[in-house]
Structures are given as C-alpha cells and as structure tokens.
Length: 497
Image (cartoon, rainbow, N blue to C red; front, side, top):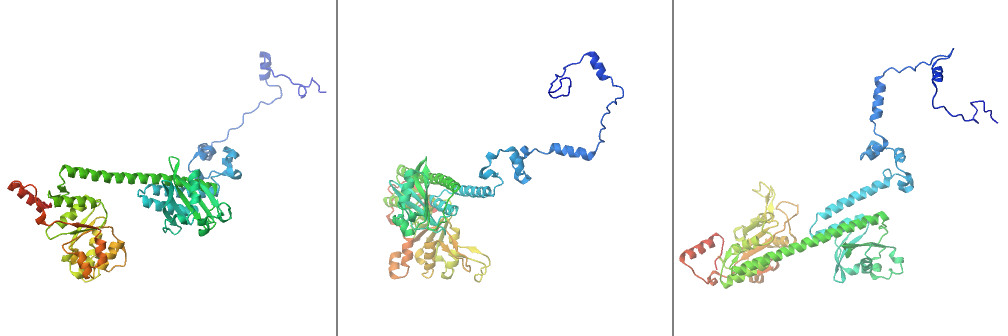
C-alpha cells in the first residue's frame, strides 16, 4: 500500500491548484535562505555563417514542394522523400515508384513514338499515301511480318492495301490472308489476338493459315462512330508478335487514330470530287447559256467548233496524254493552252517546244538538261524542258518531226517519269502532262517505221481532231467592224469559228 501522506507517491494523485492566495504567492516569490537565484542562460554570440545557414534552411523547398516540381527528377527527389508523402499503395509493381522504374521509361519512349506517328498520319490527306503510312508504322510497332487494311464494301471485306516488313507492297489477294479472323473481328468489334494458330483446333484447318504457316495474327477493328468499317490485319509466321496488355492498348489507340485519319481522307476526297463535278456542271451551264460558243480563250459558233469544245471539256480534267491533229494554222497551240488553263494543272507551268526546230544532236540536252562540263560549251548546270514543266504541261508541237533516235529516250521518260541530265548519273523524276500536236498522220508513220509505234500509242491517250479553217463557218455575220474585231481576237489568242 502506498502512503497517502507522501506527495510523491504515485498511488496518490493530488490535484494541482489553479491559483494561489496572496500570502502563498509572496512566499513563493521570496527566495529561501541559502538558495541560489537561477541565472539566465548566456546568449550565443552572433555569427554570419550561422545566419546564412538558417536562411538557406528556411528557403529550401520542402519534399512536397519538390515532388510537385516538373523538374523533380533532375533535381534529385529521392525515393525515401516520395515514400514519406505518397502512400505505398500508389506504387504498383511491388511498391516501386513508376518514376524510378526503368520500365516506365520504355513506356514513355513508346508513347512518344506513337505520338510522332499520329502527328505524321494526321498530316497526310491523300487516301492511298495514308494507307501506306499506316501499314509502315504499325509493322515495327507490333513486330508483325505483314500488315493489311481491309475495308468493308457492301457485305464484303476487300483488301485495300498490304505491306510487308521490308515496306514492299504485297498483292491485294484476299486468299493470302485469313478472312475468317478478319470477319470475326468485324462481328465482335474488338481486338482479337491469335497465337499458335497451327495448334488451335478451330483455326488450324483454315487454308490461308496452312498456306502461309502463320504462327500468330492480330486483328483490330477500324471504327467510325463506334461501328467497324474495316480491319487492320497483322500476322507473322514467327513468334515475334506477342503483345502485352500495354501493347494492346497502344495498338487500339493507334487503330483509333488511323480510323479518324482514313475517315477524314475519305471526306476530303469526296469534297474534291464534288468540287470537280460542280465545277464541270457550272461550266456546262455557262456553255449552254452562252450557246456553247466559248472554251477558255477559244471562241466559235459553228457546229464543228462546238463539237471540239465539248470534247475538250471532257478531257481537260483527265491526266492523260492528248494528241492534237490538225492542219497548219488551225490553232493547235491555242487549244493546248486552253486545255492547260482549264485543267487541274492550271497553276503550274505550260512549257511549249517545237520539235522541228531543235537540232538532232541537242534533243537530249534540251529535254533533260545537262551538267557543267558535259560537253563543249556546257559552262553551267542547266535544267531541261521536262524539269521546267514538272507538275505542269509539256506541249510537244510537231511531234512528227522528232528524230527517231531520240524517241526511245522520250518513251522511257513517259513510262517511268525518270530521266538523267546529260553528263550526270543521278536519276531525277518529273511529273508532267504531255500534249502533242502534229499535222502528219502518226499512225501511217508508225506503220512505215518512221515513227515508233509504242511511242505513238503512249502519246495517243486521247485523240482530238481540229477542224480546218475552211470548215469553220460563222452562223452570223455582223458588220465589218465586228468581223475586224473577231479577226483581231484570233490574233491575240482566240480562234473564231
């Protein structure tokens, strides 16, 4: 038992008085005899170094402030500081911080690559070029050997484009791929992954799988308003395509962006086609209002000229070679200029050349250009006519007078679009529309061997006969001043009919 008379005994709790009376307070303040008065503790002398350290500690950001800093990784936020602020349940993969996990760096790199691919796809508006870009991007992303885009046409799935790992086009043959897997993907509207196809009883009997000895395949739906309109098909005969859950999510994100780009490209193509149709209809209406007597700078009211204008309206937007056949003085160059100015290449160059005025030994240099030192007098590099007419129109007047020894070189250019300057080994390319004209019978010359038959058929994409002047009779003959004005218009670039 504890003694209650002992105040220090733990068994007895004495309440602490809240206040003291005046006598007790006076006694407490009076020092007892023999007791020393407590001395105040000495203050440290002021030190500039200590003051600087205190100020630095006060200005140093807290771990929480450093954690919120975007440059936290470079400033060295330690893992222990993170664990003081973030609960362990926020760290996946056994409690490791994803910022410190090297695997997250690989994921960030993959996301950056995917972002660059998406930006590149978004900048392509041509439908065919977009298909190639999609397939060339998805093959290294997934480790596939082949990639194809299948688009729904009615109730069927047709191969729109196919590429292999070497970025070469593969034949658009639906028999070379498994349409069974693609149709299943369309029906389920979700990503489907197939591994070890030869061991699966439900798939190993498919002919295309046996033919290509496929090991794995992945099908991803291409969606428009959450409805599939095609399939992105990937396969491999080697075990190189084993996507993880993160890879599958990335592949679905890629397919979603590819779908948006394809839909936009289709809309742009439809708008361009509608624009062409509306422009053509507008021109036809204008021609009907004007009585069909005008085409670009050409004017004519006779029946022969109206037939000519109607044919020119049909071929002006076609990117085909045109040969104009007519007598001298019928305005062949004027017709060629009108075709160019009313066609899709109107904003580009129109380059005319008279084949009968070029010496035989200078044809190659004139057409394809030359480099400095290629021959005597070649002091500077000079581009040829085909380079000057790139993306425009090259008008070959009097094509029948072209030397036959140069015709094979022109034929090769027309077939491939490739050429070399004289004295150069570099292969160049040019995209031109060729309009040729002659007063000769090229077919007869081809039969006689004085003109290459293969070049004739290459030039004769569209045959246009120009009526001779003696057949162009005006329906209305006005006063002499009007007739003089018509003759003057014929001089400045119009042909009266």
